Length: 560
Ligand code: NOJ
Image 1 (cartoon, rainbow, N blue to C red):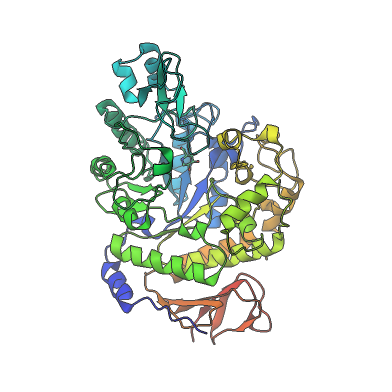
Image 2: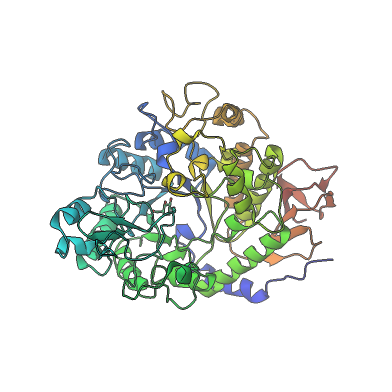
């Protein structure tokens, strides 16, 4: 059997036609996602910080990324890793100062690396001055109108207003002791804002301007699909709204049509800068509605999580690539390919666990985490091999690629973190998830030291002994390491794949094979080696087998 999956030639024509406009960095950038608390610690308090990032700019440059996206570094009690923001326009003193931020931006720009920061507009922290004022002001006060307070149910308001659940588990409502409850779609420390309130709107306009004025090139919008809500009664029950993937904008909490008024407003601000500032939305929405967030008069790009959700199967990759490429035509944007982020079990681990027919790899990995990584058995080498093959597919595709810190080291999920060390609110709120700490363990930079070079002291989450083998210094000394593969692939990508042409080459079902700019990208998902077409092998994710492409391997070839 062979693939009959060709994307029509219109794709190529459309891409060519648009190529002239495609000068924005973000359309093709390789963006490196930094989770600041876990990247590099300069002062030995166990938490990564902004000077730590600045100290690693040479590393980022040697990796060859075009941009970094920083998860929140704002003042915060870190109840949700910094997504609980006390002040959207300052730096957490534990992570640095505004001067440190400016120094970091200067160093990154000098290395030709753009800077993208996270904006968290769906909620503040419960320590935010607005929330403190809301609690003090009492029911009915204008200070409460910035959030979503409602009266409780029952004679004593002892019940929440409805049965809605937090995405982290448990009720989405918390009582404040005066008969009212507030909505928190995430942790109780993250009260949801009321986006019908003009003060809220104006405040975020200021936040966008503030960071743009501090030199950032773009924004990643957290929970972009969640800002507008229909809080009118009667409330639908949780069961009625549990499926959030609606196509008509009718869900009371997610992906409502009027959310786009906010982004049209922001686009005006973003376009008032030269060059216009970029934005990418974290929009967990039905695929047909992603276009609204990715439109030029809205954010401009929306994350495409489909690759991260796919199993290591050729048919999954085929489908995700075809949909992503078709989206590029329909959206007039580019697809943002990614294999992982700070919310997902690491890709090397997902691909090293047994494939199941009934559960996607994401679910298998989450269930495995609940066993502290004991069952089923993780095949580390297999997972790394597949993750190497996978990143070479992504880097050969038209569009932009997001790399989550540590994936360039082939890091695995840390599954056996002791319960008392867990920081993710999901771990404490949910009865069915161990949480996301396993992919947030501080990076190993060196083979020794109290935290493998992360900082001068122990790291805020314990690093396992096996991190030693993955340390940057160890991998730098090994030409065949995953880090060196990433470096070579990124360097080649920027030279080879400069326009957006794409066409599939007919192949066996277990093989994915496509052409771009006279270069072929071929991946063997099957168990047996397959012959390669004639041509010069530019890079392969594993050693070839007597000139053939082995199992779980990708090669890039220049055609004769
Ligand atoms: C999405 C972020 O990626 C995640 O880490 C965070 O917990 C939620 N939004 C809430 O802000």
